[in-house]
Amino acid sequence: MNSLLTHPLWQEDTLGSPLPDHEFGVSVSLPLWRHVIGYEEKDPAVVSKFRSGYPRFCCPPAVGALFEAAEREFAGAGERCVVFPKRTHAERCLAYVRREGFAGGRVEAFGEEALGVAVIAGAAYDAARRFWRFCGEVVSTRQACHALGRTTDETTIAEGAAAQLTLRQRLATLSGQRVEDVFLFPSGMSANSAVHRMLTSEFPGRKTLQLDFPYVDVLKLQQQFGAGVHFFPLTDPHDYDAARAVLAGEAIAGIFSEAPSNPLLRCADFERLLSIVADTQPEVPVIIDDTIATVVNVDAFRVADVVTTSLTKAFSGEGDVMAGSVILNGASRHHAAFSAFLRQSSDHEIWRGDAVALEVNSRDFTGRAAVMSRNSTALFEHLRIHPKVAKAWHSSVDGGPGYRFIQRDGGGHGCLVSFVLKDAATASPVFYDALRVCKGPSLGTSFTLVCPYTLLAHYDELDWAESCGADRFLIRVSAGLEPMEDLIARFDEALDAVAA
Image 1: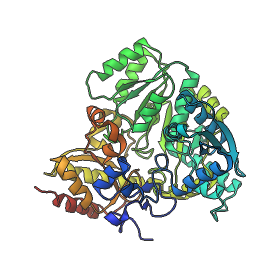
Image 2: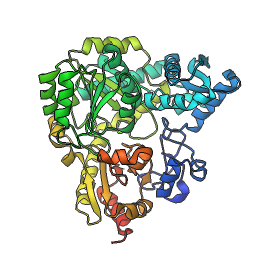
Image 3: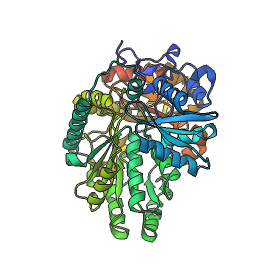
Image 4: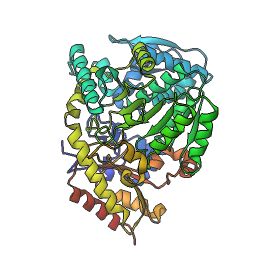
């Protein structure tokens, strides 16, 4: 198999190929701009070519086959099945489906490992898949292959447990926290979901507060579950005053923010936030997602009671395993209660084959993170002054004082760059189609990965996304490990294809 660093999948005939191009690839090739539109509009000419898909949004083939196998075993007339790693996940799905107005349903156990199966009326299937997407408690491709008897993976339970312990020790060392305060999950969203569930359990009836425009499903999680959310996208200079007023007048379950945000690479002014919290509601917990910057570059515990991370991204780097983590701040006033909740939930883990793969992938994490940071910074500096670029975003500039407050000594800026071209409506498709890098969802891979982020994440709410600062033609770049000069040359080549 060719390396995606030197032989990216960027041409039309790669549509639907997994990225990386094997069964476990978590991204999917969308090489042309019209493919992105076709995917969003469910054009059969596009989606029929998919041999993969980002697992929370599309069922990879093995996962789809697992759903079908469960339906053959359990579904009656007019029923569908959604399969989860554990029974508790299926029970939560069923509860959500019922809250959405669909009666009935039941939970079954599939296979020798008793995977949780939510058996629901066919009309409730879309609601169940929303739960799968927003809560992230997904069966991985490796786990599905094992359940179907389609794999030669002979990873033992003991080997999986050893790999998980090594991962927790690695994350504890990097974060400066204790290994017993590191919890692993089957995806980054399931880590966020667990934290949200923890907050709404510890502080029932309270809304959360979201600062800055976040990754799409983190906000939707807070909107769909619990008591709701106060959202301040920080596009208005008075947003901090508005957040202060909320905190002064209403008990809040927790404050969510990203470091930096995806895709605008901004940070809340964390020093200002801590001052507001101290003045209004000192007990409110702060939750920060450091996926973009990575623990290599920032110490989010200078602010956070809880840090969440999608380990699918830069920590893995290979793009072939889903995972997430929650790390508790040992110095937090909430540590004892939060630790007790997560231990009592006891439904968090990575499937053993994925744990072994992630342990191997992450051995060179710190070195890769440094290279990706240097490449993203160099690409940003090049794009921000290019005559065909209207605006570029990068945490070195847009992270502001908030990023600097948590940045480690010598720390960099993560892998992401975002930008918008001049005359974007006509220029963007030309540029995107000509760009010789892999194109698809996800980030943090060792190979550069590009997508029209706002179109992919917010296609049905583009006006709203733009009101939050995310231009509909924004292009997001996850810089990989390619030689810097080569990477910049590929972007210049695509920019040259755009009419002056």
